Length: 269
Image (cartoon, rainbow, N blue to C red):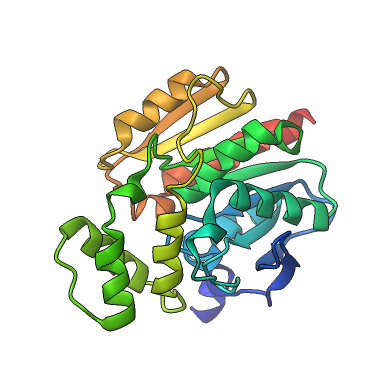
């Protein structure tokens, strides 16, 4: 039994990449060096381990012949966790991905992102179109869901333990505390920082690459995710049955659809 579950849980030591503003970004590699690379970018309050390893994505992608490059976004996992909101604008998150690709000497990759990682992926595909061959964007919001978080309540809880009264904010706090290595103060800063600048997907300027969108049937953003897919010239959509926003990454339907989507492109290369 231990051997059977090891591919789901084994993590290599992180290799750190230094961002332009001095933040250490943790990265992880699986698979053969000459295999096509899938860059996996997790969601808010998650991590590479939580989003991609424990759910079977790394196992399935490597079995299908891909190399997987995982990233802990700034503020998450083993990456640095600044407490200043100014460290978390969308431009910084996109720049981190570009720096990772440059460091690994990758001209182009397949991109898999979920939630915040999908939102970043949309922007990477738009701003760096030559770096993303095709992408799978799961649970992508069409607006600013973190804007519903009451920053002052979340900060008071993180810094002084004052109970959170707002239900939406309490839900985010519970989500953040689910992953042991999370730093709630950095995640509050991220939620505040994402309110700066262009945090909304611009449906007037969508990615032009082939994009597979996937969202759970029980996710409140389902219809809005479909609208983003419809606005994308080469977008397709798959609905993940009986999944909500927080358990969709573990969907076998999601994994299989993504592996087939990337494999069809790799076969044509």
